[in-house]
Length: 123
Image 1: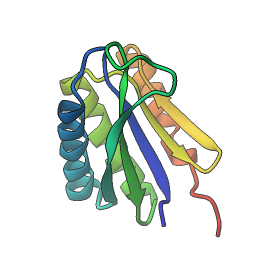
Image 2: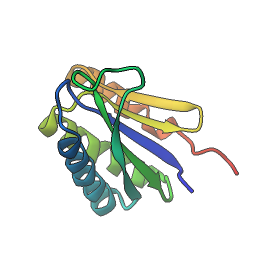
Image 3: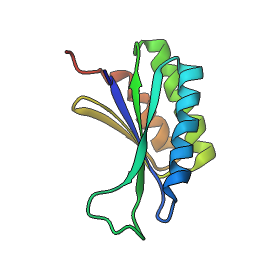
Image 4: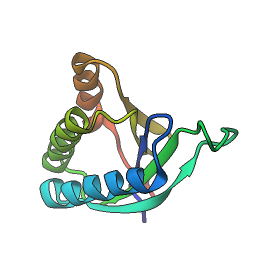
């Protein structure tokens, strides 16, 4: 079962292989530091976008116990990763709820502060 979905959007012109590598790197960091399951899905273009200018998406399925500790660790991993990678937008979705992480350091911090409010859908 996927408890949450993490979607990484790249910049125009990014190669799918490069975005997939970024997603795998992020998945490894999440598994190691946040102790959550993180399994990459292949990158795909956004619907309706032309292939030469498409913004690609990297996706991770997140599973595990979303305790206060693991969510805090996830936020830390994402903050460091975003600062170093300068990726486009990172979106975390749990059921119908989502947090979009982008913008200035202050906006990124405010978005990551919302992570503890996300709750996986009940079965």
